[in-house]
Length: 309
Ligand SMILES: Nc1nc2c(ncn2[C@@H]2O[C@H](COP(=O)(O)OP(=O)(O)OP(=O)(O)O)[C@@H](O)[C@H]2O)c(=O)[nH]1
Ligand SMILES: [Mg+2]
Image 1 (cartoon, helix red, strand yellow):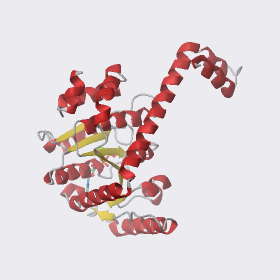
Image 2 (cartoon, helix red, strand yellow):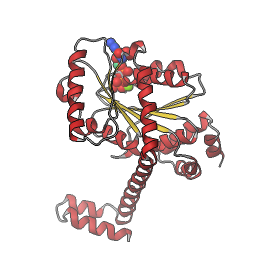
Image 3 (cartoon, rainbow, N blue to C red):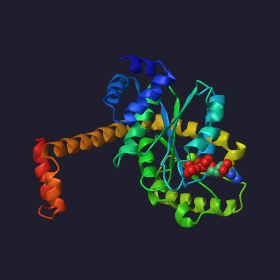
C-alpha cells in the first residue's frame, strides 16, 4: 500500500494524510495501521500536561529545539480541545513552533476533539503510531489538563511531564490527584513570575507525600524550573526525559507500558465496534424504549448484546 510505505519511509505528506484518515474514521486509516503496526513500538511517547495557559506549547517548542540539538528526531501531537478554555489555540501554537516547520526532523500535528467520548485518546494513540512508524525518536503529546484528557495522556505516554505555574490556586494546581500520582517529571514554568517559590513549595510537599506513600518506588520524580518563553530549563527537562527512558528500559517498563496501551486500544475499538453493530441491527428502537422508560438500561444492554451474538 502506497501511503503505508511512504509513512514507513518517513514522508511527511503521507503521515499527515494517514492521521487525517484515522481522525475521520476513514477505513483507509485502519488499512495504514495494519501495514505499519509491525514496525512500531520504538518511539518514546512523552505527554506534557498542565492547566490552560501554563506554557505547555512554548515549553514543547523549547524541548523540540533541545532534542534536535542532540540529534533526536521529534514528532509533536498537539491536542486542540477547541474548548472555551483555549479558544482553540492551535493557530498560536503554529506560530510558536513555526521555526521547526522547515526541519525534516520535526513533524507537528494537531488533533481535534470531534467524535464520541474516548475518541480523542483513540485518535491521539493512532497519531502516535503513525509518528512512531515514520521513525521519530520522541513523540511529544501536548494536552490541556482539564477534564478527562490528562488521565488519558498518562495512559498513552511512557513519560508524563506535569507543568505547573505560579499564581494558580491549590485546587487548580494540584490538578486531579490522579495526575499528580502519575507524573514522572514535574516542571514549574513561568519561574520569572511572582509566587514561584510558593508554588515550588506546594509541589515539593506533594512530591514528599507521594514519596512517603510509596517508599519502594524506584523512580524519584524530579522537580524542575523553567522559563519556557526564554528557553530556560529545556536542557534539564530533556536530561530528565532521557534519564526516565533509561529507567524504563532497565526495568522493562517501556515494553510493558507500550503493550498495555495497545491492549487498551483494542478494547476501546472493540467496545466502539460492538456498540455500533448492535445499534445498527436493532435500529434505534431499543434505545427509544429506554427513553420512554418502558425498558430499563440493563435489560436494554442484554437485548442489544443479543443482536450482536
Ligand atoms: N512570563 C512567562 N510567560 C510565559 C512563559 N512560558 C510561556 N509564557 C507565555 O504564556 C502564554 C501561554 O503559553 P502557551 O505555551 O500557549 O501555553 P499552553 O499551556 O500551551 O496554553 P493552552 O494550550 O492554551 O492551554 C503565552 O503568552 C506565552 O508566551 C514563561 O516561562 N514566562
Ligand atoms: Mg498549548
